[in-house]
Length: 263
Length: 375
Ligand SMILES: Nc1ncnc2c1ncn2[C@@H]1O[C@H](COP(=O)(O)OP(=O)(O)OP(=O)(O)O)[C@@H](O)[C@H]1O
Ligand SMILES: [Mg+2]
Image (cartoon, rainbow over all chains, first blue to last red; front, top):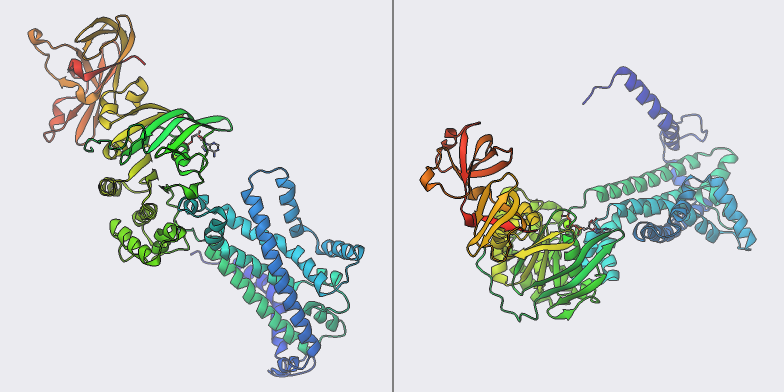
């Protein structure tokens, strides 16, 4: 291995510091004994205990988890179907526009996605709330699932399916017993990605939510506007931990699928 | 080489019959008006250069491609409309196509489960197959935990597990190294003898086809150039192309000078005259090519004595020597510049040393060693 020069070390340290010092400060201060956010008052877990009594915050967390679960599930099904269509139907007419449309939300500014969804919901007279946020998050995350699953399907050996059919397995059963299990890790990774994206989103959620439904990021944001409370640090730390676990899980699973499929 | 194959099924009802089958892709005709019968219990090899349509032919039998024209019969029944999952035919894929999420046992039993075979029978069949391909004890492994040779055996066992009427093998040994490939060739032959299943194998390795098959179909541009036993194809090629494709050969182009009952005399373009035996029905004046295999040419360093001067003798200078271990290949340049290849078995160690570059040598071959080709 090449040794890092002093210059490399310094730039690495600076880069990492730039990325993680703010988060580190947040995590450290979530264990602050003092009520004042900027003054260190010794180690304490009292803000975590305080969370247990903050019912609105807990409710917001539950709402977020629910939305994340349902929208990620829907996005996984739709995204997988889109990926299958894109890889399997060959060069059908309109494949390119379809592919572009599936992937557009990847690069579309969230404000625009959020605003257009808001306009749509208003136009059709849909009452805004948990359902609209869920639909919006499905729209947002579907393309991420499609990308992950499509890249797995692109390297999928079609002769596996032919072998199954050759051995007496009809096409639908072949899909369920061979194709799906082989691409399952990619689908799971797509689901986890969609889940964490939905959990983190604030822009689209604030455009499409209604009075009754407050997601966790929205709740945190509105509380912070009145001044940073130590409880918020604690909640954010938990949030970071959950997201990190989900993302790491997703990357571990997708790494497993990329291992050359022996066969 | 195989023992002679004796067909036992009805001549009008072969196991497989291609009847003027054509398959086109956008701009290529992969299989062109091809007719072929394969008999029950036969080991048939399809041999041909890359892109000649071998895989397409096999995939039509398996049901993955449909013929555009012509009929495809299996045991007397037209199977054009039967989907792959209902055909009593199994295929061993070139890439093996083992299911990565299933164990060895799961892979081999996959086909049996599809036909809802009772658990007990599946177990028995699985044990039988594992024994057959000598993989006992590995049934719990996943494909990625196996060596290349073991994977190849699993693929074979999986394709044989359903006791298909015809087993299709698409370049089954291409991924193995030479030693293992030769071993596996003999195993496959022994297996086929024992199971008595019809095997259709695709290969581009002519030695492999010659070793294993009862009959070989040599394909070119979607058509069968010749069908016959390995010896027929090698010793009586029907065209210049087949003679050149299988093994090494020397050609002398010329015209038939005189035709008689016991053979013809061919005068080649350089004025040499050769005798060839056993060529009934060729008229004098026909343009022909005389094909002689290098191993059928006798190479001598001393001039044959004039009285006993055998027919078909030419003199030349050694232009190149290829030492292959078991034999040496001499390229001899004749007066007119024609290069003739002759091979000599190295029966003694270091025997090659008495013929050197630029030595004058005499080449001769018997009249029945030459094949007269009109195509
Ligand atoms: N699905 C397809 N679409 C278009 N052309 C095809 C398709 N399959 C085969 N071909 C063409 O048909 C011809 C015969 O192909 P085939 O795969 O049968 O050749 P092969 O004899 O098996 O060659 P190889 O020894 O290289 O495997 C080739 O020209 C190939 O390009
Ligand atoms: Mg091929």
